[in-house]
Length: 75
Image (cartoon, rainbow, N blue to C red; front, side, top):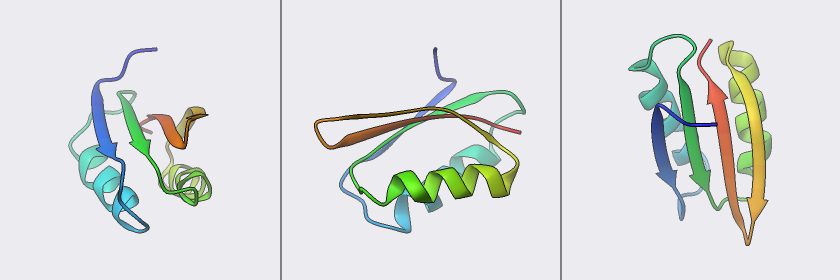
């Protein structure tokens, strides 16, 4: 799955990954995909709620060596 925009939020703590994602997704068109990488363990819960509340679709979540990758389709 390829992303239209990639966002690196590694090393940032809540709420910064969500704030960066919100800014990025506002500039995207519906159905485009945002890829976000983060290291905050709480980001999984945060992005699940953020996507649902924003009308977006969380397509995939992966964790590898403490790095979380989220693929989100803009609603």
